[in-house]
Amino acid sequence: MVSSLLTLPSTFSRLNLLPKSSILIPFTYEALNSLKSHKQQRLRPLNHPLLYFPSSFNSSATHFSTSRNPVSSKSFDDDLVVLGIETSCDDTAAAIVRGNGEILSQVVSSQADLLARYGGVAPKMAEEAHSQVIDQVVQDTLDKAGLTGKELSAVAVTIGPGLSLCLRVGVQKARRVAGNFNLPIISVHHMEAHALVARLIEKELQFPFLALLISGGHNLLVLAHDLGHYTQLGTTIDDAIGEAFDKTAKWLGLDMRKSGGPAVEQLAQEGDAESVRFSIPMKQHKDCNFSYAGLKTQVKLAIASRNIDAKVPLLCASSQDRSSRADIAASFQRVAVLHLEERCERAVEWALKIEPSIKQLVVSGGVASNQYVRARLDQVVKKYSLQLVCPPPNLCTDNGVMVAWTGIENFRVGRYDPPPPANDPDDFMYDLRPRWPLGEEYAEGRSESRFLRSARVHPSLTSIVQASLQQQ
Ligand code: KG4
Ligand code: ZN
Image (tube, rainbow, N blue to C red):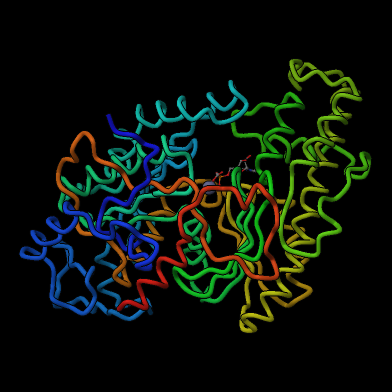
């Protein structure tokens, strides 16, 4: 029986190149054997130990570099075709993207009904739902692109952060596809993918840039110095903003079938945003961290004091009841976003001190599809003459395109694993990273929150990538 909670590294991975002191088993027996056999067939003897040329490339036309700068040879980008798989939370998503950024297909199967029924993600149910649809989602993605597995160059998959049970379904599928078609596999950090998808949309977006990543489970302000190199300026000390939107929707008795955020956003348009005086979180903390637990409690109390019954659907509510729900939705949204605005202003100031050349604030993750969020943050960046870059809503919420694209960015610089065997043994321990920071904390932004200090985490993506670069 495979334990999905075990998170020991099990492949020779770009992400397993930890500093020697912090890793026990850098290369497993299986990984070394796999590397040896593939080396004979397909590995080219280049400087980078993980460089690998897929058979679908015409190597004479390919300019593969061992430097950290992306290779943007036209033929290389056109020939590169990557399948991305995402199952970290409640969406089963896949997409096929070309190296030049062309999206060949994308499919998302959402667990909206489960979400509506339970008012949140139940890991075991979510795992089952992923398992039921994953094969079909991947097949539909290939069919829509008019491709077979043979025509792919690599498979990218989210390995964390997220729910272990759910991540496992995607990783297992990705390894099966990669194994069957002898393709390299790229392990993707979910939050890096949310940030980097902005580079697919906005071709002018160069490193360094500032990113605000806001979703159901994360509230991150990061300075993106380079691919795989991030400084965390702030994070949440308790809940993320998306979680606060979802709970507000549930307590207001809204239709959760498209998740709570869009329902609150829509109802807020009818309400008076000044009518309920919620207080802005963490005003006294002059840092870039977030907190939404207190605001959630304020919303709950406001709902209780107005005798709103969540069991009465909005459509059946009296006009007075409806308008008091709308006032709460609008007031909640205003204050939730004011908290973002305040933290973003400070983050821009910090970021400009560390990297004076930044020109953009990227806002991504599910909550970035909210139009009010976008409009307010646009006002913030204008004060600093920066540009706001938001991917379109369907690329802000979880999707396979962001995973495929992050795979492409990493693949171009040689960060990937050799193909796995066609079949993993039953007791194979998947490399899953449910709690996995993106970057190292900025000293000024360090939080003393016990919640953050006690969280069991993997070394950050940044520390792993930087250590591997130093070893080269
Ligand atoms: O990035 P995402 O799809 O999944 C996670 O990684 O969590 O984000 C989902 C979150 C949910 O909490 C959802 O309610 C929120 O994004 N969301 C929104 C909107 N659309 C999605 N929140 C506010 N306004 C929206 N329009
Ligand atoms: Zn997400």
